[in-house]
Every structure is written in structure tokens, then in C-alpha cells.
Image 1 (cartoon, protein in one colour):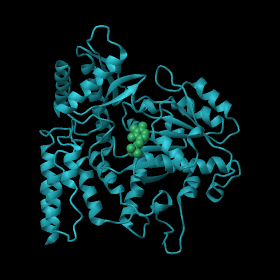
Image 2: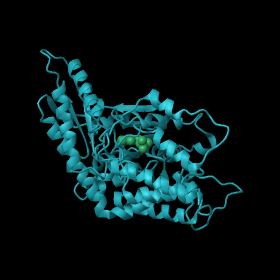
Image 3: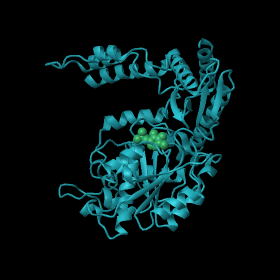
Length: 467
Ligand SMILES: *Cc1c(COP(=O)(O)O)cnc(C)c1O
């Protein structure tokens, strides 16, 4: 009875949010002070009715929930949720199984096992690679690079899991200098240290060139080395030439890790997968579910070819745990012990979309990104800074001031972005790329349609006219 009234009320709230996405402003319509005031109820002595908790919660967050799950949100790299994934996520919380062991949630363990195989097939990764479902690409990096740390130090007869890093040969990571910030935190967590991450310059095309990579490898010859390659640069969506680079790194005995947070998904499209040619030769891959696949947060995937190193880095045995001899126990592969059955939403999303649906989602969002960038870039006072190859592109807005400097254009660009966001019609975020402020155009949501794109272009046009 309690549940029925509560969950029916919650369903009504959820539907009213979803059904208003098209009309509601995509940006916040309230501010920090207001939110603190509304949500900061004094900690009560006595509890209250659950339905009232939810009703008040919904009222208190009014205007502070962005339209990230709708089709007009183009900030950062933010996906929505395909309907089956959202529904499956509700069930995940309802079932509330600890996804640590087969014994603690048999169906959930098998769902994750199936997800791993499907994901490898969709992304074109080796079938025998081990995998983990984690909270996002950041933890996928941690998982993969913990495996890399194990394997690279084992080659130097150093058992890092037993001895730690004190006294170990220092690991170095070679990567292009545009890498995502999540790597900096990964190396902090793993004790590798940011001084051991070597910046290699990118060329005009926005990726490493082979001479820079070879030089880096030669400079660090004899050292345990990880080469980090980007599958989808955060600003430009650019890919490194994997087919050429991975064999070079392997010749030098390095481990190759791929940051494919969103970009690896391009491999699921027959039209775009050529951009990832050779990526399957890497040693580990980190990718998000909650961005381009459109499953709810928190969801990322780690894949590792050396399953021994992966398991050595993550698994733990304790007398009170019941390990299964045949089934897959998730905690042998994840950095966490108890966690939610995050495979369920992924499973549902992939079943709803099928291979074709995933490919269409990728292709459609790439097409919309291209359309947004070229049409916004063609508006008077705008210019295209990066024409998208996939679903990330950049535009910039030029100040009309006489003798305007780069600083004027930067300020003008930020001011146009702020006006567009303020309009509530579309949400874009800014970035500094090659020293210049730009507006990022990133389309990751399965819902974005022709009308959303027209509305976004109109919003930018209005913001430009207002300046
Ligand atoms: C988003 C992103 C990450 C971090 O992923 P989280 O899921 O936010 O942890 C890493 N690399 C790239 C390229 C990204 O876009």
C-alpha cells in the first residue's frame, strides 16, 4: 500500500518531467541561494510520510534540474537515457542487488557477463578481453591502468600488488598533451604521479605524429611505459592513428591504453568505424555508457586483454565471501566491493537499440553536430573553429569592435554562450582551444531531432543579434 501510492506518485512526477522536456527551459531558472534555502531544511527529529518527501523534493528542485535528458542539451559530453535503460535503472534500485558476486545477485552477474560480450562485439574489441562495469570512464581508467601497472612492473620482476610502488622502477605514461583531465587523477590515485606523465605535442590534425611518439618511446627506453592514445579528443573528437601507433608502442614493449570515453562508440557504426582502425590491438580500453550509449549515470566500462593482470590488480579473496567456480564474480574485476547492478541499464539499452539502433544513434548525432557547427559557423559574426569528424565541433564568435583583439573575441564568445544558455532554448558550454575561447558543440542525446537543431541555431542567432 505504502509502495503503491508512493511509486504511482513518483511515476507521475517522472512523466511530468519527461513530458515537459520539449517546452521547459534547458538551463537553470533558479540560483544557488534559492536552492540552498529550499533544500536546506533543518535536520528533523521526526521523519515524514514518504510520498510527502517525494512531493517536496520535486517542488524544492524546481528550476534546478537542467534539461540534460532532452534533445537541446549540447554542453560538455552529456548523454540522455534511452527509455528501456531508464526503466531498467528503476528496476535496478527496486531489486537492489549487491553486484559483487554471483552469489549475491545471480541474475545480475549473468546480465553483466552478457553485457561484456555484447559491448566487445559492438565496439570491435577482442572477444577474450576481460571487462568491468564501473562508475564511468574515470574509474575505467583506474581499472585499466592498475592492470597496466601490474603487467608493466611484472616485466621488471616487481610484484606491485605485494610490494607497492616504493622502490619500484618508475612507470612513465606517454600521451598527447590534449588528454582528458581524468588521466591526471588516475595517475594520482595509482601512485604513478603526474611528473611521470610525458606530454607529447599534437600536430595540426590534433593528434600525435609518429616521430613524436617514437622519440618519447626512445627517451624512456628500458622504463615500464604506458602509451595513452585518444579515441575522440574532448574538443575535436579526433582519433590517433591506431593502426600505425599501436605496433610502434608494442615494438618498444609499452602497454597501450585507449581513452575512448565517447569516441570508441564510433566503432559501432559501419560509417565511422574506419576512424578506429587498429584500435583492437591495444591492451586496454576505457569507455563510457552514460555518454553516447545513453544509459543513466553512473556507467562506464573497462576492457583489458591481459585478464591475469586485470584480476591480479582487482580481485580479493576473503573467507566470508562465496566465490563461484564457474560464474563470473564482478568484484574480481571492479575496484568496488558492493555496487549497484549497473549492467541492467546497459543490457536494456542494447536490447532496445540493437546493433542497428546503436549505429543509427551514433550516425544521427554526428550528422546533427555537423549541421549545428556549419550552420552556426556560417552566421554573421561566427566562425567554424573545428569542423566535426564525429559528434564534437567548435565555433567562435567575433567581436564587431573596431580593431578587436583575440581577448575581445574571447569575451564576446563567452558572452554569446551565456546569452544562449540564458535563453533556455539550448545549452552549450565553452572551452579554450589552441589559446582561443570557443563554444563546444557536442551532440550525444538519442532524443535530439531536427526541431531541436533548428531551435538551437535560432537561439544562437538571437543571441548574436542581441550583442
Ligand atoms: C568524460 C570523459 C572522461 C571521464 O569520464 P567520466 O565518465 O566522466 O568519468 C574521460 N575522457 C574523455 C575523453 C571524456 O570525454
